[in-house]
Length: 428
Image (tube, rainbow, N blue to C red; front, side):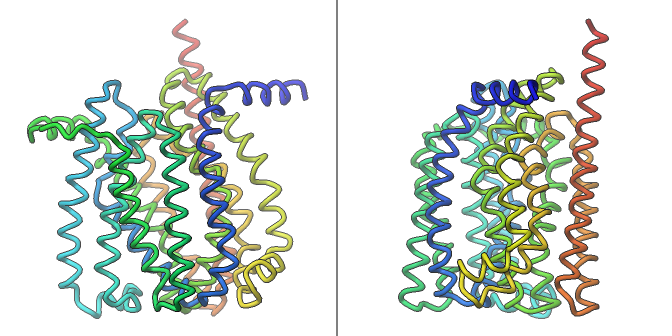
């Protein structure tokens, strides 16, 4: 008990938590705006509208992760700021270059192929989704740049502005009864957010020559070599349920899943993403001091558990009633899904912010293995549900496999840290 109280005391006084407080305030305000708007927006648009938005957002997310070859993740690591800035511009060039090729390619894709991957409902929105993916990839790159320079107040302010823009425009589209209004709101939010991000970045657009950028790209070749396959597989497997639910069940079911996912992801959006940004930087600074790194990891797990356990326990027990009351009776099915998925989201809340430990410890090569396994079991779970015509069975299998993967992943991380602690002791 004494050790637990001492850990809480250290947690409150650490620089980690001080940085965290700045981002938490911005995140709470921004997500608070979104949370307050959900009961209204859920009554303005039907589950099929949210299903179409899920498809659009999946293409955006996949595109954004394809473009930069994972170079933005490396922005935080260099000792010199100049090298980090070059990584920013490398990421920009990749976004625009590869993005333009993808956009051109989207116009010549056969209709049968588009239908086979469940994107036929997007129609003309497919090219718009790719353009939005380009914008999002640049936004994500700039977010790493802000984190690198500890610009947490700017990050917090940008989160609030993004939420205000997206929420207000979504409400406007719903009030005016604009068809596909949720997608219009997303595109508008990406466009305005990118402009604000660039203005806030204060990047020096120096004339870097191609040879310099190629040299930096080669120096950080582990990004495309090890991180990129894993990250790309991660985003594919993350978006896979939306695509497969549309193909094997219906767009309406995709809408239910999207709503359940969005609501369950709120704790991660409120705290997990904020903690992840700071944790990655702090852990990278402490490593290879494995003992200090392990203490930071345990503090982070404790903090996330305190935040997440009460929330997800309540949703597991009475998710259906919460969704029906808060979003309307038409979202009862989403509440049933949320009750099944809640325990998985609790484990994910503990895992996701701290999963970057595997990067700092130099075990990037394991990421593609975990991502490939996720691709297989997520597809298999939903396919079994499809064969039995029972999406809830598919989701239950999904949850079991996902929790098992998280436990194995974190076991490997802890084992690596413990080995490093032993090695450090032997040196002295």
